[in-house]
Length: 50
Image (spheres, rainbow, N blue to C red):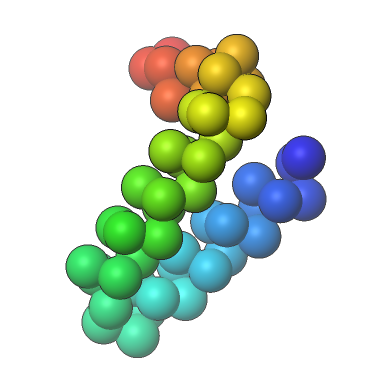
């Protein structure tokens, strides 16, 4: 799962670097929505403030 999370952030960063802010936002939001439906505990862990 850690590799998947890293890959998502790499893709998000690449999109933002290419000026695709909206696409990057949608990409992360879609990933998080899917994660929440599949593994709500992990979703809560990675979205909760420190």
